[in-house]
Image (cartoon, rainbow, N blue to C red; front, side):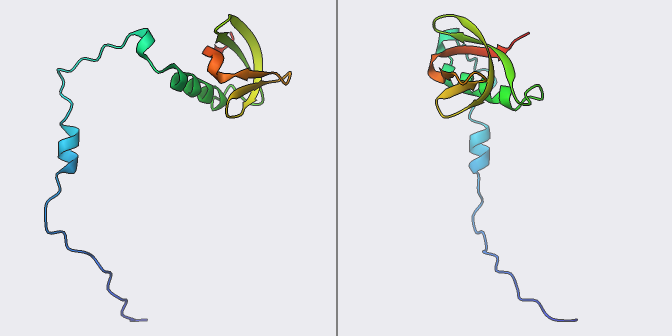
Length: 106
């Protein structure tokens, strides 16, 4: 069992890389970012909140949620989502683009 294994090719690095050093030191501690409520990207926040609901331990088959739409607040039981809609237990489609906020109902 004393077979000689083939050598592994390893390319020789002749110059020093400093990419990570340049990237990690670009933002200083004196920089303050002031975001107003209207400046936040709402569509990404809504998708993140929806994904958090579906990945929560409280979600098994359906989730009781309060959905704040442009028209008002509704309480629904959601069971899934497709690309652009939330699907309720009553087979109602709610457009994600119309959602302002979503959270678990108390």
